[in-house]
Length: 162
Length: 162
DNA sequence: CAGAATACGGATAATAAATATCCTTATTTC
DNA sequence: GAAATAAGGATATTTATTATCCGTATTCTG
Image (tube, rainbow over all chains, first blue to last red; front, side, top):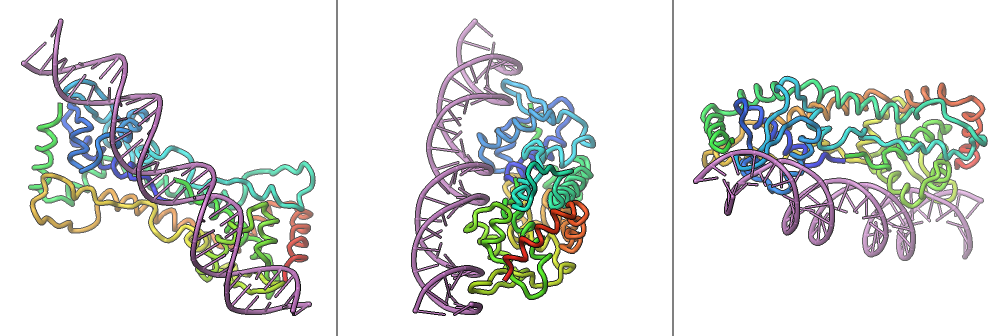
């Protein structure tokens, strides 16, 4: 089990969009070029973000994407769920129902004990993702990345932002 | 992203093995029949548990599997990792390295900020799985399942345990 | 107003992973 | 010696992921 590569792409793209000045948009083309990704397929990930209302888009030359909410109000979980879907990572197929000892018409009171544990773990994962916002990510990146690279990247993006 | 169905199967099988009297083995055939699963494919999951040293096997008629350690010493994480592998659920392909603004020969100090968050969440998931043992699971099941069904299932298993 | 650039969605192909079955071998029990 | 078993290799089958291509509507630019 491994997350789609689109999750990674979407998160990095959101980090870039988070640094965009108000009212500006950045195109799929620019985002793909900046990250060295296939434009057409990255486009699908960005469309997922758009459908989840995390980003807004505009058409035409100088078109592209921008965040739809303040960076503090978009979490890792938002982005992950936009791309991966909101379904739990453990699917219970209720195999206990196949127990040959079950009386006819027996009905389970609640979800399977195995599933409950797996779902608790899933929720712990989501809680952690929910606790980190894009604002936090940008602050971290600003500390990680050398100032010169940070600035040149910012300028690279600005030059292409419509 | 969704866990393999073999994870579910392995956990349920471990729950059964956890109730086995000392020194007894239960075959793939019995485990498959009890859970309504394809014997050949379930066998692969059990082999994973065996390779991870979570269970011991013996050959011949009256052969099968038993737990290799006390139920309190086998966690959900042990079983999940035996089947799914120990790799993290987020794979960082280090796309930041494609940034066109990077100076020639630039080298990253540490892992990517995005990956660190994703890996923290992965670890939170694993920590939760690590916190629940088979002993805990069996206690929960004993409370969930009606005594009569619990007992008839126990007898069903015992009749087939070598 | 014309042309270019864009997001969007549908269709399709290519690749990889999960699911499943079959068969052979070595071991153990009876 | 016969039967049952785990183990592992080989191979399909199915599903998910990754990727590309194309047509459409929209928006900006000249």
